[in-house]
Image (tube, rainbow, N blue to C red; front, side, top):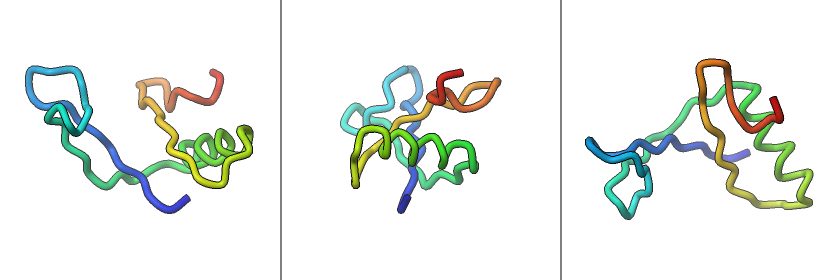
Amino acid sequence: MVAAIERRAKDGDFRSNLHRGGVATVADITAAEREIAVKAAQTLGLDVAGVDILRASRGPLGDGK
């Protein structure tokens, strides 16, 4: 893993797409989020991948919970 960003929607919108006005910032990720991203890429046999993870009050979504 080499980088992580967090995308936020502009005020009044739900879309965080950068070309729609969203903003990206450097993200500090947890060990669980790192594990999910690496496992997802390995499962698909990818050397390079972009993995989206949704943060929720119960923890990161994307690990099958």
